[in-house]
Image (cartoon, rainbow, N blue to C red; front, side, top):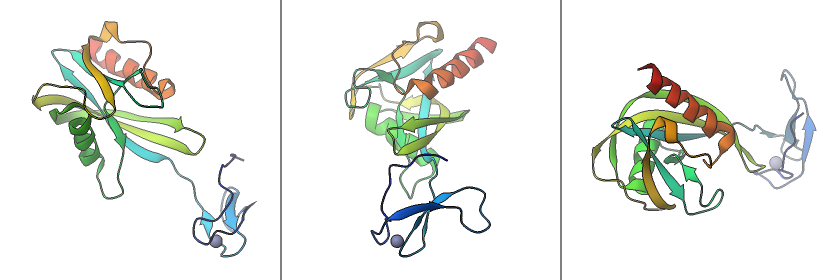
Length: 173
Ligand SMILES: [Zn+2]
């Protein structure tokens, strides 16, 4: 059984207890008072592998977690966004770039603190306008060739796999 940091019902504030709902395949936290079930799912995030002349754009985080580490532009999806809208918005907010999405790299699970599992959706993209500059949440932006990617990349338990997949695709071209 997965542990959970949540103790109280988000609807009515009463205590949650673990039990297996009728017909379900696993135990879940259920409210003692209102019987609602606390379903927990990964939180979707969308990010971009922006490539120009074979080099990948990374930005250096200026905020925690992983302040000072390199990161891919991207972030959590808002409730009313598509993944494509999220990634275009995040790239614009973090780098000032307008990009065109050219493909999909893949889907990568990770954890984000004790509360969340993230489902990271990575698009391939190329710049269409602007020169990247560090805006919100970044102190520096830089283009990296596949063989000079930095070691200190934020959220390494999924980003290292995603970077290796990207570098592998580039080398097969
Ligand atoms: Zn409740």
